[in-house]
Length: 91
Image 1 (cartoon, rainbow, N blue to C red):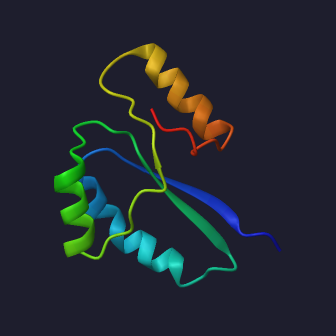
Image 2: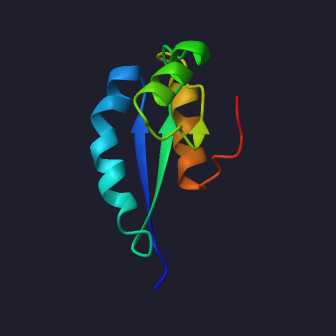
């Protein structure tokens, strides 16, 4: 059976702390789930985030979509990327 894709979407550093236990639980079942962490890019600072992920042993996001703040156009673009599972694009 093919693993189920699960998209975990987080935006700010505190969100990554909150989803960490979920990601660790899903990682215990690699044949059942294929979780992907998606960072919206809101308030993203590469240096601070890299330190957070490394120091707290958190999974780095699989995808950065750089939504920014507020624009409906960006929200639709974000939805389209997730719907098409195209998390390889980085904006």
